[in-house]
Structure formats: C-alpha cells, structure tokens
Image 1: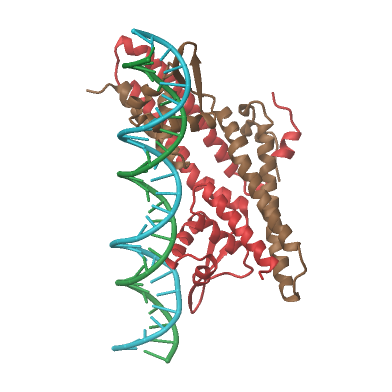
Image 2: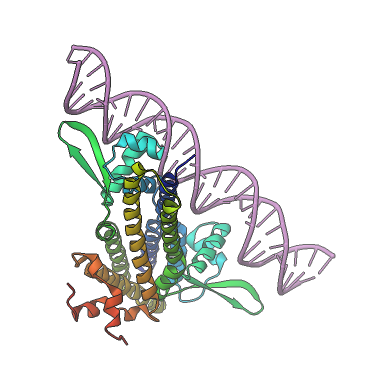
Length: 179
Length: 179
DNA sequence: TTAATCGTTTAGATAGATCTAAACGTTAAG
DNA sequence: CTTAACGTTTAGATCTATCTAAACGATTAA
C-alpha cells in the first residue's frame, strides 16, 4: 500500500500540473517543477524520467524552458557529466523574472503595434466621408495605447523593487484613502 | 489600392490576434474583439463572418466566450432577431472581471490543492526514516501555501476597488518609502 | 580504440483545440 | 402552413503543440 507521504506528493504534483496547464504551459512542465520542488536534493534528468514518467527528450525540452523562465536552476559538478536540477523556490523572484522577460516583451510589442496603427492612420489625407471614421479609430486606438502604456509603467514600477515581498499592497492601502 | 484607414485597421486586428494567441486564446477571438473595438456601431454575427473571415459557427463560439470574459456585450432589439455585438472598452473593468472569475478560481483551487497535500501528509504516523523527508515536504508545502494565500489576498484587495484606475501604483508609491 | 553515459535534436506519432460545413430549433413573415 | 432568417450545436477535418523513440555528438572510462 502506498504511503501517505507519497500520496501527498502525487497530489501536489498533480495540482502543479493543473496550474501549469491552466497558464498555457505543458502539464509535464508543471510536473517536473513539482517534482523538483519536493526534492531535498538536486535531481538528474534520468531520475526525472522515472519520476515524472515522460521520455528523456521531453524532459530535456521542458527543463530547458523551465530554466528560461527562471523556475529551475541547473547545477554542474566537476568530473560529472550529469546535470543537477533544483527548483527555484522564491516565487516572487520567478514572477519578477517572467514579468521582465515574457510579459514585458509582449506589452512592448502590443504598445508598438497600436502606435503603428495610429501612425498608419495619419499617413495620408483621406476623403471627407472617411474623416469621421478616422477620428473614431484614432480615439479608440489612443485609448488602448494609453492603457498599455499605463500597464507598462506599472510593470516597470513593480520591477523596480528589489524584493516583491516588500510590495505589500495590503499594508500600503490601509494607510491611505483613495478617491 | 487599399486605403490607409483600412491598412491601419487590419494592422490593429492582427496585433490583437497576436496578443490573444499569446495569452492562450484563439487568434480568431482576438480578431473578433479587434473588429468590434474598431466599429462605431454594434455589429451582427453575419457581418463578422465577412469581416473576420471565419465560419458562422466559429463566430458563435468565440462570441460566447468573449461574452463570458466580459470583453464584449450583446445587445438585442425588439422585433429584430439579430444580436448586436459591441466591445467592452473599459479595460480595467475587463481585467477585474477576469481576475474575479477566471484567475480567482484558479488561485483558490491551487491553494486548496496545496492545503490538501499538507493534510495528507499529516494523516498518519510515518516511520522514523520518513520523518525527515516529511518535515521537508511540510516546509515547502507551507511556503507555497503562504504564497498563494498572499496572492489571493492581493487579488481580493484589488477587486475591492470600484475602479481599478484609482489604484494608481505610481502615485501611491511615490509617497512612501518601504523597507 | 572501444564502449558506455550523458544531454540534445529530430522525424514521426498523438492528442487536444479550433475550424468548417451542415443540420437543427426557433421565431417571424408571407 | 410554408418559407426565410437567425443563432447554436455537432460531426468530422485540420492544425498546432507536445510527446516518443531513435539517432546523434560529446565526453569519460576501460
């Protein structure tokens, strides 16, 4: 019969897999992170193959991606060709990294695309009949541009903190009343 | 030759489609929202078929989902069986709705899953040799639980604002220095 | 040199999500 | 009652992401 400690572990890994899938990542990616998160010692890829139950190739790919998101770290040992993997356990640090690399780029790109559309709109004179529509487009596009711009600034501001934990909204907001 | 106003429109819709895809939604969903966002008048589904270039069935499905996310609104007219669609243009409102329905549920679920794992861990006595590992699991699981808990509170706090625009982080933070 | 052990890459298989086309149920008009 | 105009649902096609299995290159050991 299975031990509680193992059931607990599997339940946890299943949960992480679900979250991973929800956020648009492969389930296996979550499972790998979960397995590493509950390992007292660094883990090799071959161990993950048997633990997580997917092929070596898939492990390799997912590990590489997890590394890119700053969710795991790869350690090396001299005279040992194995890679030793361990989970990054500072979640705020992970969020920060993701905001910086993944979302930030997308925000920038979105912002750029809208700005670009605005420019296109103004490149050339248009007929009188289009004037009204053009103004409408212009208003909506500017609205969205401003939204992305604000979002961008917010992210930038959040990133300015060395430690996200210090961004304690609750404490912050209890002190002031905003209109 | 194509007018600038149309090129601008297409460029914009393409951009929104990209964002949509990036966040794990269908491209078509973004395209539909983009088309509605740049329409001065409410739009019918049949119009979307020709504008966006996908089948009526796909329009129907995507429109329903957009509606669920609070990104578009469906209007009805008496004595007219057509549905009139328009974009929700208050982005903060949209974010709030998504946080409330989609993410909130996921956070709760994640939190619950971790708590559940912790309970499992403590259900029964374990052998002395497992004691150390159990304590390790317990520590990590509690860490994660606390993280989700904080996240949950943050979301709750954000939702407490009637208008997200009033949550002006920049202004807020400039007034105080946090340790 | 040969064999074994790594992580990575790739070709093809598989699965899941999304699309199309068509059938459907409903409502209003003729 | 019949027909037309809607939005919705569904069966099957298609497309994309991910997986497996196998080949690969590199490194160490024998």
